[in-house]
Image (cartoon, rainbow, N blue to C red; front, side, top):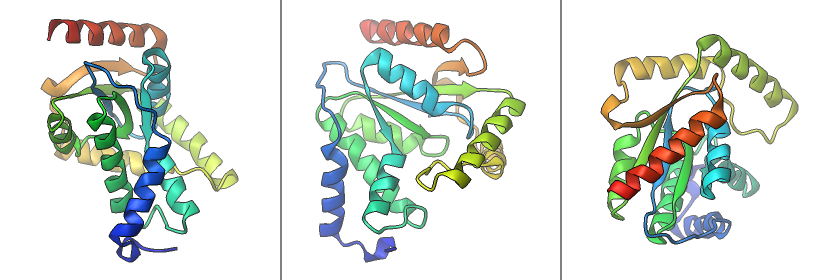
Length: 208
């Protein structure tokens, strides 16, 4: 498979056009982003899916980009910078078209860049902190790892090792609490908490 250095700008634009081709636009007056802070296994994708269904907002998933790269003979795991560039440009495309987006990714270290990107479009990203007990997180990660062995198309390959790496990064650079818009405990009733989150979002934009 090709490395990032083998991708010229023309090839990048071809990939970018494929990425945005599947993105539905829905221009709104109050368009915004939702992203998450939390370790692997905490339930980001589950919360993102429920929020998407409730709010009718597109979920930006990097696995879609990884799968596209693999289909074009480019290793997604050896080209993380390319994945991130395409993901950032996809978000910018949505914001250029006044479309809200849920970013299904952890932004523990990337949040300043996320804030800056949204500010370019006079918008903002709401950071949702996800919490879960370690025992449950490790159980989820162990279950997910069994899927890797059965399905080569699974691209979310977080393991216990990634979880402990996250804890180390968080200890060194904790996410600022004043930037947390809402906190969800993914071991508790999600429907009730997400209903509260949606009410908080609506109230926030009505008062802003």
